[in-house]
Structures are given as C-alpha cells and as structure tokens.
Image 1 (cartoon, rainbow, N blue to C red):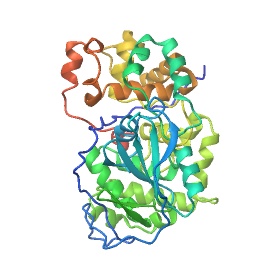
Image 2 (image 1 turned 120 degrees about the horizontal axis):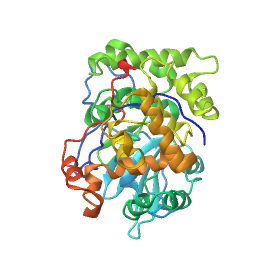
Image 3 (image 1 turned 60 degrees about the horizontal axis):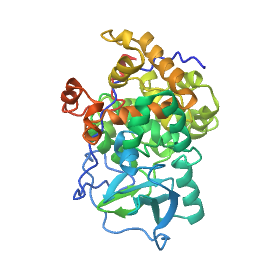
Image 4 (image 1 turned 90 degrees about the vertical axis):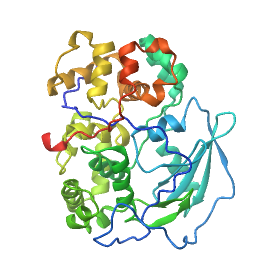
Length: 382
C-alpha cells in the first residue's frame, strides 16, 4: 500500500446544518467591486438574457449514489446554496444549475442558464464524479470495517466532488482560521468578480473569476472587504498562478497527474497554502482520492477506531502521516472517500439521525458543542 508522508494536519470546520429555506442572503452584482465594498453585496436590478432549459431532467442517480444534504453543506464547497426543499443551486464554469431530490429520492437537475445544454450536463456529471460508484466503494469499505457498514446504512450518498482546482484553491485559502459563515461571505465576494449568471431562490450566482481577473484585485480591496491577513495570500497566489508559463489554471490541472506527495509539495509553493489545506484541495479537486485531511476531529476518529494505542497523545506532523497511512491501509486507494463519510458522521446534525448505540455518553456531549470550521487551521504555522 502506498505510503503517505505529507504533514496533513488542520483544524477542519464542522459545517452547520443546511441553511433555512427562508434565507435571503445575496451576493454582489458588480463584476468590478469598489474598494470599499463590504461582505454584504447588493441585489442586481435585472438578470442577463441567457438560454434556459425548459424542465427538470432525471440525472439517473439514486439517493444512495448522491445525497445532496450529505454532499453540499458538509465543507467541500462554499458556493452551492440551498434554494428549496432538498434543492441546491450552484455554478460549474459558465453553467448555472440546480439539483434536487424527487419524491423517490432520485436526483434531477435544472439548467437555469448555459451557453450549451450538452456541455452543461457533461460538466455536471464530471463535477459530481459520477464515474465512481459509491455502491461499489462502500461495499469494499464495509467488508473491511463493520462500523462503516452500519454507518453507511444511515448516511447513504455522501459523495466527494470533483471541483475546478482554481475554485477549490481560492475557497480553501479563505478557510484559514475562519468560520463557515465568514468563509461563505468571502467566497461570495470573490465569486462576484466573475460574470453574473442569474438569481435563484434569492441568491445571486456568478461564474468563478479567471486567474487573470483575480490577479487584477488588490490586497487593499480585499482587506477593505474584510479578508484580513488572507488578502495577501489570495493576491499572492493569484500572481503566482498568473506567472505560470502555461497559465495557472492549466498548471493546477496538471497536478491531477502527479503522485499525492508531489501534488501536496506543488500546492505548498503557493502563498498561504500549507500541507493542511493542500490535502483538502488534493482530495476535492485533484483526483487524489487517498488524500486524508487530518484535523483534530479525524485524529479523534483515528485514535478511537484505527490507532487506539495513540489515544491521549498530542497530534504532531509525524502522527498526522501515521493517521493518513492508517486510513489508506484500512480503506485503500479511495480512503479519502471513506474518511469523508466518517467525518460527516461526526457532525452534530448527523449524529442526531443515527441510532444511539453508535455513540457513548461522552460522544453525545461532544455532539452538542459549537460547530467549528473545516480546513480552518492557521496556515501561517505551516
């Protein structure tokens, strides 16, 4: 089994339950915000003329292959919004789409705007990683772990997304030492620099800005918008990407072809990216399916079920590597997918849905603690 040696420690936020359906949060309407713009953008006066798809279309994915509530509001992405009961809306490139569960649990999609309907569907299928069968993966995981087999009965459809690397990178730069609400506002601000695509459920949606557009934003603009010290990391990273000979976007995509350690090392050359956040980027956008983002919560899972002999020890970079190796040894080449489900099972909102025999008294008390933030450890200490 491949040995993993990167230092992958982070304090990953525990995402909150899906937002209430009555929310009216919006993002900015301008493609070039003023330096004084805050993280509370304004509402556009009108929507652009775009091609629309006439109806909801079955995606041929059952809820056991894709659960929207277990995939979107769990800290992988901060750009998809809940726009209705069991409905989430977001953008993939120039395409604005919604996904929702039908009464039987199957998933359907609606294209709000797109330059090409066929391209929109292909982009959606790629984004959802539909080439990977959860049923087959979970069968293997369950054969190796009886506890996983029990959890899988109650938490079906927790899928790992295949995001655009630039988008994923910028989102997790915003996550450093931060909370879910503020991360989302920052990501919304950055998104508003891109082309406006439409409004759904009271939320405005934009195509994620290009590296070229990002490089035109000043550190001062971001600081005035409330990004704090993260502003220099975002502008610095945009500048480094822009300077790449083949373009920053292509350079990031090329990391999908590297080994995990090589991808982690490459990401860590970017301002503000340490091995902690790099593991999240590798798992959620670079096809590094065995990347294990080790935070204090994953450390607790590991010492409880995989490495009980380490219970009570202090988490160090060396032990982070040992935890990652333990997950890969247990679950194989897609260990990151198994770890994602185990992490989701630790969220207070999900623990409440599980039979009581899964948790002892101490764990039930822990489930009531205030939600913390995924991948939010301070990269300054990397």
